[in-house]
Image (cartoon, rainbow, N blue to C red; front, side, top):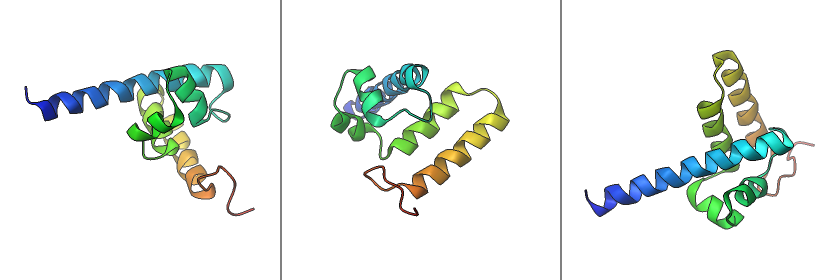
Length: 98
């Protein structure tokens, strides 16, 4: 197994760890209230480390929905909500369109 393949597997394993941390954070504060800092805390890392693996928090939320939500109708509705939410907020978490 080449180094590149090992690196890809390590990255994927770390992303799965973040998804598990997201699940714990959602159980604590709810999907609507969870923030990247909550997930990082659950994962035992900094927010900066979190963003080394995820381009945006919304990308990670969509991956969490794919992994943990079983009902396809709910999955589609949540992904639509996440997409709209990501378009409305800037990097600081403030709404652009208010």
